[in-house]
Length: 95
Image 1 (cartoon, rainbow, N blue to C red):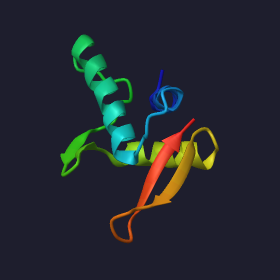
Image 2 (image 1 turned 60 degrees about the vertical axis):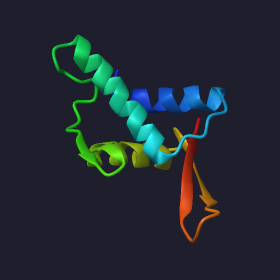
Image 3 (image 1 turned 45 degrees about the vertical axis):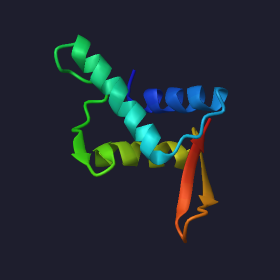
C-alpha cells in the first residue's frame, strides 16, 4: 500500500459515512495511518513522507502534491464551497 492507496481509501471511507472531509482532515488521517504503522514497524511509515508540524497539525508538501494529483486525475473529487465567514473557500473531498 502507498500514499495514493491510503488517500483513496480514506476518501472512500469518509464518503461512505457521509463525513465532511476537508484538506486538513484528509492530511491528518493520512498522518495517523503513518503514525499507527510506524509504531508497529520500528519507525518506518507507509508513505515515507517527511512529516513536519505546523499551526494546524502534521504537514508535508508531498501529501499536498499527492492529493492534487489524485484530484486532477479524477481518482478523488474535490469540491469548493464558499465559506460563511468571509471570502475564503472551503475545500471538501469525496470518492
